[in-house]
Image (tube, helix red, strand yellow):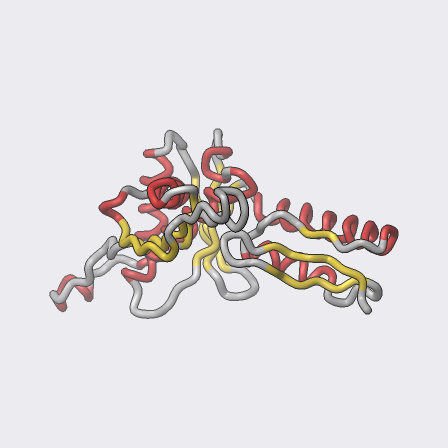
Length: 219
């Protein structure tokens, strides 16, 4: 994942917090050093770093162990439960398969706000961690969607309603609207919702993790 901050240290610490990891768990690459800009005011840039989780489960070369290896999905579910308990959450995790063939881990329990985080950011970070772990164990690529109390379904509805409300605002005021930075998944929800709108168009601008959607009138 890519993280940014006022200093390299801030960017690293922010990324580690989102991943729920420590420095020993990740490889860190500094993508951009911070810059104060002209007179310390104009053109200032934050530091930007890339954090990659290290191998969490080294592959075994023992053919007997490989034959008896547990299912990667079940092991990933156990790993998730252990991680959540470390966060002070006593979870119940049910697994299923969605219409796209992705494995869905649905978490229920109390005090899940700590797992979800602001606009689902902690949930997304934990999802990344679980997918890295699962794919270290599996010979084939797996895709796990992590959800808590059906937050993603509710968030999708919120974004769809927001997109229609802002589209109507753009039509009424004839001024484009720039949304706050969102993940690529959330941007796709808005693009898809408005792709057939007769009067407005959408496009993205900026770089991750500050990429934003713009809703504007069609020319």
